[in-house]
Length: 263
View 1 (cartoon, rainbow, N blue to C red):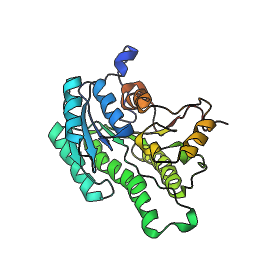
View 2: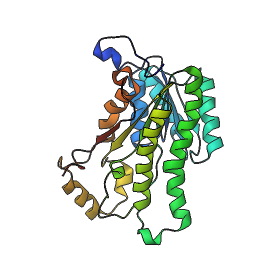
View 3: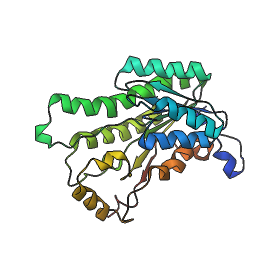
View 4: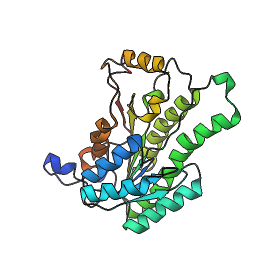
């Protein structure tokens, strides 16, 4: 059914994910870990998809025991189409279904555009854009058979502006591609799933810490809120997108940036 209409219910019940099954790529660190926790806190059973984490299994066990839900970790390189498709299928088999996929894996680099090598450019695109598509595509095959599903992409404010002082044309282009791709898929898949994006601004994760202090001070000065967000401050937005609270929303890009893109 096109944008399947849920029953009317008290508003807090609309956010309830009890009995749902969700998978999160990049789900064992940073934003992805907070999203995994959030979905479990809302009642969903959660699969954390990771690439290199050594703590994923422990994190999954902690999420399961803390929230009285089922959680497990699965290793996959999202840039390998057959690999991520196999893992997404395995998750659906293990959990009995798949209701929500959060397409969150991403990498970045800071290289002057004229200096990119083929390998450096391709690496960003393979994870951020190709991997995002392969992940959503794998889930869509399950959603189409079920007749329902929900895709949530983690994009970025970098999809809509040019960050300074760092030079990151590849990252920005990849995230702009994700936003446009999500809009296309929202229309193409409207008969069996919703597709939305969340575009965070500066989030205080370990990825930010690797950058020079003067860069971080510059970014902070450009944010009207005068601070970076903590990853947990995104939890409500992902639960909103994953739940019936956003049942008529598809093709949207929610920018959460403390006002960074406004001036």
